[in-house]
Length: 289
Image (cartoon, rainbow, N blue to C red):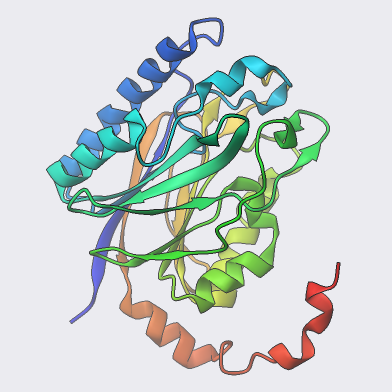
């Protein structure tokens, strides 16, 4: 019998002006997102993820210490606890991307993973931190991740997380596969222009190279402080053959869902045997500085 799981991705535009108090922005974003969490629950979604740092704008377009005040603890912060309640309510695994405070002045771009009974399973911290013009000043806000590439054994599937810029690096995507991921979620904030054609190229390639499903999430529309381009949505699922299973529109808030047959992973890996034919003894150059 096939192992079919129903998975969902939430993409939204910003729900409040960035000139509002930070708590009001957070509350507006959570209210907007919870509408889709409830929709996912009614639709029987079993695995769900939202966009990168979903509780606010993509603030890394400027270097402003104001945004440091939008951090929260994981798992003891309010958003993780709220999503634990929703996970338990709907028997749903939820991946929750947040701006995390480990200690005062020590902040990470993180995703908490919550199991279907509301149990906090752990977190992934974004490993690759861009600092490039125009508008990606992430080293001002985030330390590089220090938790490796964990895979979480949830009720429905083995889940890995990669965050936005991580997707340009095949090494971590491969490690997630070696660690047993069946689906990798990539919550993102990516804009039209140079990266848009890569959006539909790199992550299907990771899915093919590693024989797992990918759920890629992007935000929607125009927002400050990023005033130089459009977040183009198009959140999608692809299968271990790199084929698209479902995709959202570029310009609409949405929940996109797909039924993923996890037995396809064995079928594809037994066909291609990429893991069997790896030659790690020849890859020493990959880990040189």
